[in-house]
View 1: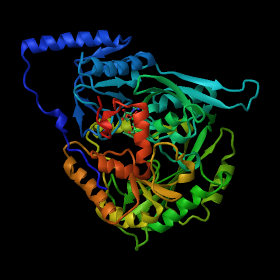
View 2 (view 1 turned 180 degrees about the horizontal axis):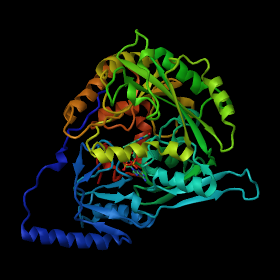
View 3 (view 1 turned 180 degrees about the vertical axis):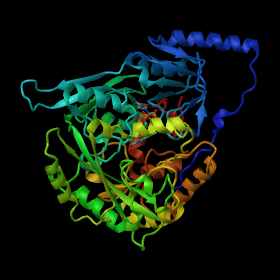
View 4 (view 1 turned 60 degrees about the vertical axis):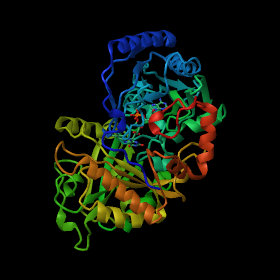
Length: 530
Ligand code: FAD
């Protein structure tokens, strides 16, 4: 299974011949017809430039970009595409919902006859729902629009009710619909599962142009299909997400290891501990055993006043070191001595290098928005808008030590200019009825290679893409059990191999909910049917 990694600029960007005046007039008439045909309440922009995404590896110019005002507009758009093929009145092909465009490989794009719907333009519904008003412990949920950013969900819920969702992503500038179409993974997933395991109801506009409310008990095939469904079965317009009381504060801790097996044993020990005995957040990362200012020792401390004492690193250490990153929630007014004691007890038997432990206390909101600060810095120095050939994998526990030996210790021993995340997840916290596919076994690891590069400095984007291919080829050659997270393939065979036993279920769901293959063409799984 070798991933198809797109060329730096995709073939969709080829120059077209200049148009004759009559052709332009005819085109304008068609556009006017199209506007009438769709009867949008929102607006349609035919003069949009090419769409790009966070990856910056692809761009494509759709026929038009739609700014919808509500769910009904989505229905109108999809029905117009369906009827355009029946009447041949226009040549509309596909519809791509665009969340915040934070995909890497053009997943939210469409071709030159497709329409891109800007989901963030729909009014950002965020309503807290209390199921049982008379009971203070009644279940509480938030109903949130598919185009709403997770950071807005956090701020609204926390500041209006002191409540918050349970499962997050590391970075919250992503839309609810965008992450639920993939999985939504962060350091809470070991306990609560990914975001796809933390939603009780969805409203979806299917590829047939129908608005459907679905849940575990109502239209469950659509519900499970859409979760992790890569946008293939419907556009998520509303999600109901359970809330719980939010802590006020977080003790954020990093502990350094020189040996991979000690790092993974401790990480697995923590994710398997009972809730009352473990941290509230568990992740980890690999860094370079050197003074490299970006990839090395200085990337570990949690504040400019903390120093990394390199003399503590054992002589036997290899080219890379490992950092277990954990967090403990607490409330304002909790005795800090008690917090210290709880932490000491929990880390007492861990085998990290003593004196290579870093701590910081910060508010819960600051903790969840920790990447936003880095985003602002990265925007200022140009690395946020530069291309990001990221690679995200889910690797089975049985292969993770060999993966470390071959990939981290060899191919990536000098780092990647950004975080190299690695942490264990538990399959029992994932709902196998959703469309997400996972490696075998209860424990598997998220590996995220989040490459950042200064403009015009370091290896070319093509070299980085080649390095990603080398990693995937190495995993395939060794027979590792792994899946791409946020997958991107081009051929049927690669998609079939990705989904494995679940391919036929995925195809059946497509036939049922988007039979003409109108939705999310940028995933390149199905071709448009007439
Ligand atoms: P887009 O990129 O706009 O869309 C992604 C796909 O979903 C497209 O196919 C699109 O058509 C479809 N889609 C979008 N909205 C909808 C909708 N409402 N209904 C149905 N389909 C829809 N992921 C994690 O799991 N954990 C992380 O910690 C994490 N951190 C990240 C940090 C950064 C800086 C970036 C760039 C990405 C990160 N991701 C993370 C990956 C992220 O979850 C995915 O890229 C996700 O798709 C981005 O969401 P988006 O809203 O930008 O979606």
